[in-house]
Length: 227
Image 1 (cartoon, helix red, strand yellow):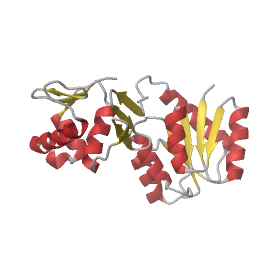
Image 2 (image 1 turned 180 degrees about the vertical axis):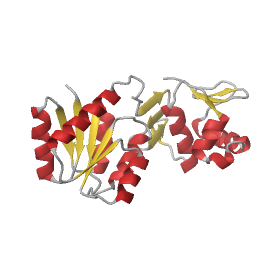
Image 3 (image 1 turned 30 degrees about the horizontal axis):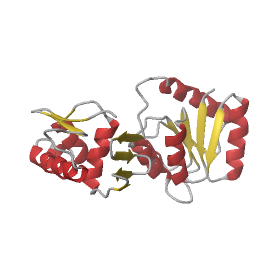
């Protein structure tokens, strides 16, 4: 049974969606909160997510961006906002499709089936949590713990660690990392990256000659050791 997570603040629409989806053999989970929706997406790993943009705590586009930091779960935006700029913003943030309210449940089901076919790719899923030794990274909540306490990282230190976690076990080249963190204009500024990696290693107590977490691939890039 495919699992759908609904993040929608309108109780009547949530009820309508639940009844319709369950009648079409979907398992349904729901919340009205963006923050809780991100957490549930990490906990439940649904096959598809249906998201409203107008949530009471954080914006729908922010929900999409947070989830896209660690997951490729297909996202269908279901919103009363029909402005082209807002549609583009949601799609640019990482949504797969955009349906405007009021909507046809028949059309929505058809789009869900398309999303499920997309979701059948075994490479789409990525872990939302990394645990190894004293290090725990919770990507869904953007928290890093080390030695039993929360570890405070700079924005770029966290971005580097997140990038390594989402590609755990794989070698990322210097240029790949630089483009992701600093942008295309800095894709050759390897000294920036060396300083950043050094700072992160220092906070993790990671000796580059005997690494527990971040391995240097000489002349190529870096790799995060698998749990």
